[in-house]
Length: 355
Image (cartoon, rainbow, N blue to C red; front, side, top):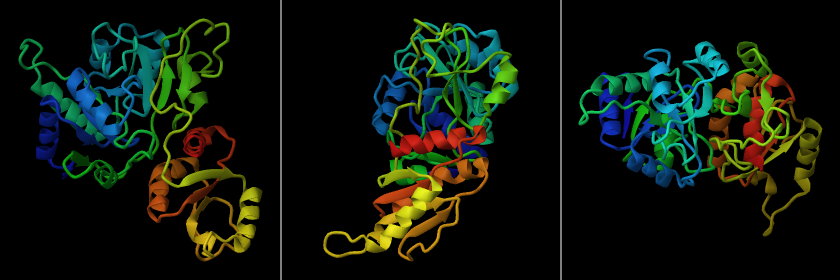
């Protein structure tokens, strides 16, 4: 069931569903999430089961911007380092997830049993409307009507598949019985940047749309990469698990192959000589997503133009992969994104989709 997020009654229905232990499809500025009360272990278990996601693969918890996210963070996190507080002040509400030490006994299921928990304050007005409604419905002084401090909401798709960026994507994948708030296409189109704040220094676990340089300026220290496990700062400290960081992820049914422009043109040039068993033309089984203009692309090949701008590509990336996959092709050839800082998030998603 898809309801308009512009309707206050729909926001109320979504908040009531969360309080009742049910799941909802929640629009955010990154991708649509499959939301549940982060403190309700049974509801969180439904999220894992619906997605087919391993229960030890943690979820990101979304908190209200009521006080800059401070009270939500205080409920779930045992400690917030100074650099994490600076990041919250600069980028929340927004597409930044912080991994923080978790308070014992709080959000255990959503955290996948880890001693840390991922927290984000989303910028989408519909997500915030639901979070605000949940705060208004709760009463800290009434045990029978507890405050819902956060919504655990991984992407609303089957585990490992392409993330949804419209309400229709969610319904197509998870069915019509799920209450989905339609907040329109997601503005950013790829998931949040994830920074680990549990080991004394900021560590980038997953790139998003935020620039490394800007993050470092706000932190006042160097942003370490997850590959620096043996650095003096991180040596001997265990890295937490985080959403969307498995080698293979964000994958359509078709096989994704990344190629630079010369290799892509060479592959196109060979298509006229390739036949499938039974004598059918191989070109009908291939789709291409590329920035560089290609010569002599067979008419049977589905061709989509990739924008020259990283943000524009991020905005449409998952929708394009879903649309190309829906044509029934077996292969999706994608031009490798530029090796530039602003393309890091898009490059990460495509590398995992192709793994």
